[in-house]
Image (cartoon, rainbow, N blue to C red; front, side, top):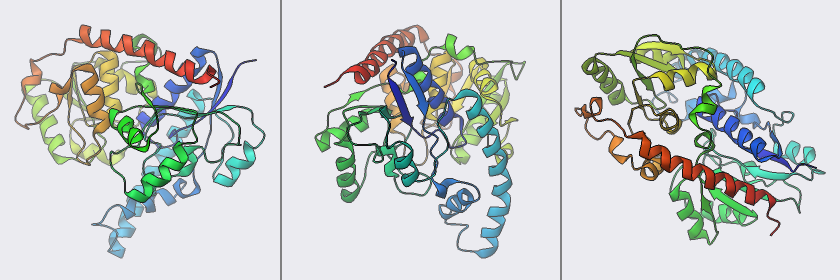
Amino acid sequence: MKIQVRVITRHRPANYGSLLQSIATQKILDKIGVESKIIDYIAKEETGSRIAFIQLKQKKGWNKNPLKKMAYILGREPENIVMYHHFTKMRKKYLLMTKQVNSHEELRKYFKNSKAVFMTGSDQVWGPVSTGTYDSAYFLDFVPKGNKKIAFASSFGKAKFNEKTMKEYKQYLAQYDKIAVREDKAVEILDDMGIESEQVLDPTLLIDKNEWSKYITKNVVKEEYVLVYQIHNDQKLNAYAKMFAKKSGLKLVRVSPIFHQFKRGGKFVYLPDIGEFLSLVKNAKYLITDSFHGTAFAINFNTQFIEVLPNTGTSSRNQSILELTGLQDRILKDLNDFRFIKDKIDFSRVNEIMDAHRESCVKCLKTMLIDNK
């Protein structure tokens, strides 16, 4: 009988990174030969119109004025609904999931008799979620006593937490049988707790370009172009991308699931399917991104890229993969620096590094699942 694995991860946010890492996690588990399902968990606080109110709380310039509050909600809610339905459709298409559960009580009831191995997957599962605080479900606090608990490519999302949070984290994480994390900073955090861990690649990097290319159905843009894939609101990135495209003599293309990004410049590709998104990254002459998964897929597809570190102070995962591949020089430090047009990445060396790490990471996951110690 195949080992059954139930994975909890951040598969529900309406962004490409969350969905792609979920697809990759399940694909790797299936390749290993286990039967896997993504636990379709989404807290009630992160469903429906509640998400717009959560986003609003984080906008200090908007949430103090009643008129601004109303304008924000009316502007964002239709956009959120469109994104929700589109990503729901893609999740159903690409993921094998359990039934939907919306609370810790539902999780405990649903899995109370399960004999599966439970796994916390990739993405920023152990950091603050949309509500601004962590969710203990991602620490597998609902799992029946006696079931094996592992973590693979999990992330804290940031490098520092207060003493109270660290104490709570230690209590949860000490109950895992095996832990592998995505960033070197996460290894350091766990080491400070006295908990052993290994560092592994994000699941999206465990699948090579040939495998990812199978998802591509068509090429979205015919001529050569510079692609912008931007997660954070950074006006400097917008200005740099426009100037980079001008100096390189190429068309500027922007891809996003967020409609209001059309104002930031470039031919706008709104809310494409996974295959179209991957096509845009694969076929770009250059990618300018502040996204970890944007960087990951540039590495997968051997696309020349420029890294603009996030302006939110959460860049540890971006820096970690750049250090691993020796690509720290792709970080943009000067907005007048356009050397990247001519200075190209030697991907032959990068591919050798990635191939070696892919093999060791898959072996690590396999060992975590079958090791009974």
